Amino acid sequence: MQVPFWPVPMTMQTYVVLTLAALFGWRLGAATMGTYLAEGVLGLPVFAGTPTNGIGFAYMAGPTGGYLAGYLVAVVLVGVLTESRWNLSILSTAAVLLIGELTILSLGCCWLAVQFGWEKAVTFGFGPFLLGDGVKLVLAVATVVHSRRLVARDNAW
Image (tube, rainbow, N blue to C red; front, top):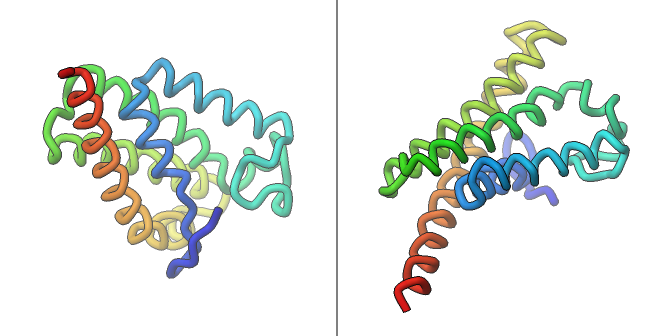
């Protein structure tokens, strides 16, 4: 699903990645993300732009491959930080999820730089995503904090 947004359409993929990592932890999060990536490698149309922009390993080796790898790394990193109780407050939750977001953007940008050079990678693979990713980051923080409160309330009974 894509949301019309400027300067690039916004998908909710990074929101799901960050929320999944913070709520599932690194093991279940990595297993879930690994399954998602394996489905994509097998040619299932699970990635944004598939099958129009290709499928399978060829799609993953293309311009979005670094972002996809970043999803897995971010899930593990955010999951580990979450499980170490590093995100007990709203601000520390935001910091943990921001680390995850920057991990995704950095790996995506690095992969683009290998293919197209640093200037194009930053111009087209980093800058255009900042506004949308900021919105998704706020939504992810709100979701994680609210979900934790619901679980804590239910466990209090």
